[in-house]
Image (cartoon, rainbow, N blue to C red; front, side, top):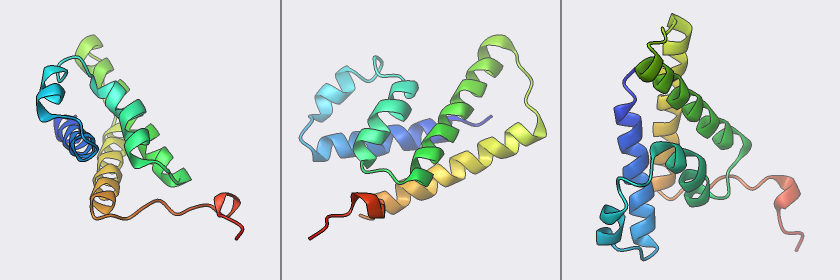
Length: 118
């Protein structure tokens, strides 16, 4: 599976958001090897993309599932079915769309239960 493009997109998006919030590029580079893709997917992305709509949370969960499968393939020699490959392609595509939308300034829709009642 070509997970490298997904990892790169996540890292660039997250780092750009951190820099915009005042984190220095030098500090990000200092910790680059210490922060794994699992942390970026499961901690950084939800934090940077907050608030998340239900479908956006599902996109992140799907990307994490692909990451886990990729690890099984690389470290244990697991096979990948056609369905799993298509799932991975769709998960990456959905993530790229989400990051592109959010980079353009779109925010997650606020569910009716969380809207202010003013």
